[in-house]
Structures are given as C-alpha cells and as structure tokens.
Length: 460
Image 1 (spheres, rainbow, N blue to C red):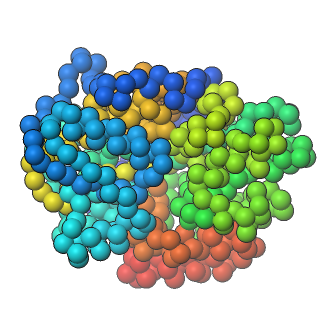
Image 2: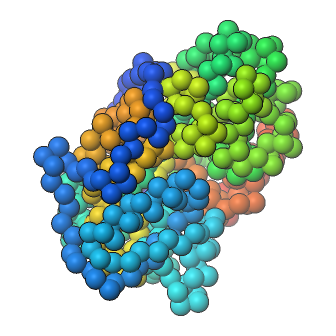
Image 3: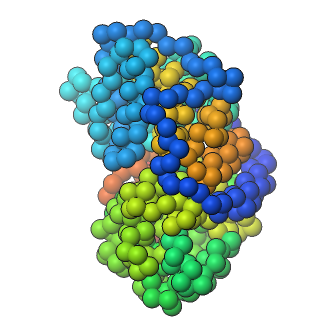
C-alpha cells in the first residue's frame, strides 16, 4: 500500500502549503451564503470545462449496470441524478445498490454469490488495494485514464492507483477540517470563531455558560471519531509524523499519539461538553449529530458539530440555511497551523465491460461532477468543474481551496489503513476511539489497544 501514496508522502513542501490553504480557508469560509439547495438548477443540466465541451460517451442501448455505495439519504438521491444523466446520454439502465460498512465485506458476499455490482464506490484507498489483491478490481481503460489525466491533479490520480495501475476514479472528495456552528447560539453567547485550539476551548466554555452544550458528536459511527483525532494529530505532530503513523512506520504508543489523545480529552473528557454525554454520543449517528445542532431554535442540543463539507446536506435537512443559520470555520490550529485533511470516494470497476468503462469515464468528467455540485453537500477534486456550479459562496470557497491545493493535502489516515483497522464498525481504530470517548482518562490503555490492533492489521 505504501507505493500507492509515495507521491503524496514525499512532498517536502506539504506543511507550508497546508498552512497557506488553512489561512485561505480562515479568510473565506465565513462568507455569507445562500440556501443550501439554491442554484441547483435542473438535475439533467450538465456543466463541463470552461470551453463548454462535454465528455463523449458511447450508445449503450439495452445495457444495464449496478453501482454499489454506502451512501444514503440526500447523498444517495443526488448521486442517482448523476446516474440518470448517464442513462439519458447512453441509453443504458443503471441501478443503485445500497451497501453496508465495511463495503469490502458487503462486496465479498455479493461476489461469493455470483452477483457483484459492475462498479463500487470505495471510501478507502485501503479498500481499493484489498479489491485489487482479491482480484476483484479491473483496471481503468484508456478513455477513463485520459479523462482522469485531463481533469485531476497527479496526487488525486495516484491515490487511485495500486502499483503503477490505475483502478480508481475519485469522484467525490471531502474537506474534513471544518467545524460548523449554530450562528444564533454563538450570537446569544457572545462567542467568536476560534483560530487556535485554546480559542476553541474558550468558545466552548462561553457557549456552555450561556446554557447550551458546546459540541455534538456522532459517536455511533467510529469514522467521525477518527476524523477528530486525525485533525488534532496532523496539526500537533506535523505532516511527517502523520505520514509515518498512517503507514504504521511509528507505533501508536508513540508519545505524539499520547499528546493528541490528551488534547482530544480536553473536549471529550470535559463534563457536559458533549451532547448527551458519552453514552448519548455513542447512540448518535452522523446525520443526527448535525441536525440536532441546527434544530430547536436558540436552544438546540449543541452549538457546534465537527465534520466535513458534506454536512451541508444534513444542515439543509434540518431546515437551516448555510451562511445564515449555519456557518463554518477551519479546524483550529493545535500546533503551528490548522490541519487540512481530505477524504474521498473512488469508482472502481468490478465487472469489466464497455458500459462499466463508459460510466467510469463519465464519473471522471466535469459533466458528472457538475450535476452533483449544483445540488449541494458535495465536493469534487475535478479541477475542471466550474466553481460557480457550487450553490453558495461557502461551498464555492471550500471547493476552490481544495482544487487550488493541488497535491498538497493529507488524505484521511484511517482510510489509508487496512480496513480491519481503519474502516470496520466495532473493531480497530473505530472501536478504540469509541471506548476512549467513554473513558478519555485511559490514554495509555487506548494507545496499547490501538497498537495491538494496528500491528495485527498491518502484519506486524
């Protein structure tokens, strides 16, 4: 798996670039925005490059495809509109197959039963490597690779490779270094947007003193907890240590991990700082963690919720407006600079065919990404998506910052890990951090558990 990330890991200027990107976000993310679903346009309307060209697709009348992904709710509905456009252009019929985490296990059962989907949207680079190792994944063809080369930075192409072969199209990206807040709560409390960790703790106490719980945490889904840790670790320990821990080149018993967990405990271990306490957080899934921050008038269950740009979909579900009811600031700097952590979902072909290759090519194009960009709650690493496609100024700034960063980003650490450690409910890092949320005083025990699980998953 190390070869997959070699290009990104060896960038010597990453720390400085991350600081520049974080500074840009700090200056722009509070720009006023419109309604989350405004400016969406017709779901069949397509964008493309600035010259107005579109990707060429073959006629596939009578062909049928299945696409599997773990997406649900509005995210699934919006992606189906992209698939509908592919159907319209090609004549093929595409069915969406709802998958469950961990998706590799879900796909394994499908393949064992002789019914694999044609394409799977894999949320972890580690899952792509597993699919290749199991000989499930099929390489991308010339058309898809050409579309990728035209529209993606080298870094985003490389994380879809295993060895020298291109398998993944990173259709969806995420800026996972954001904290969303209820503007009414902040105004009532007299709190201001923090830029540093200490300022975040001050804002939290100010909100608490006003009678509102500071944070909502979706602890029922372990990935939200790994995201908390990763942002703190990247900012506090720095990008070189981050890369080493991501590849298990240093152990989870390293003092840098202790420092990050100690910092994290300043929120998770503070009495009444988390909505519902640890027990309530562990029963709160990600969508609920967002909606409960933006419902209840000026007395919601929490004033802030940490998660990526995709939280906008859930903010809209709560009836709140991004830029007015809900605003956002970059994850505060714990160390020298604010962290910049990205995630993403890649289209990987499991049943090779002309239709599957055509859909992968379409998903690599600005045409497909533009459709979903207009619907909100979505971010594309495709550099040829017109920034005006995003439905509000907040989303436009987030998207521009991601594209402008080029290859200078750090991919979600748990997504780089073997899925047994970084992406399985009730196991590995997800379970260890859920346990830590329950008992944030047990730093040494958490480190020992993380290291034991990591050693087993990485093979020693």
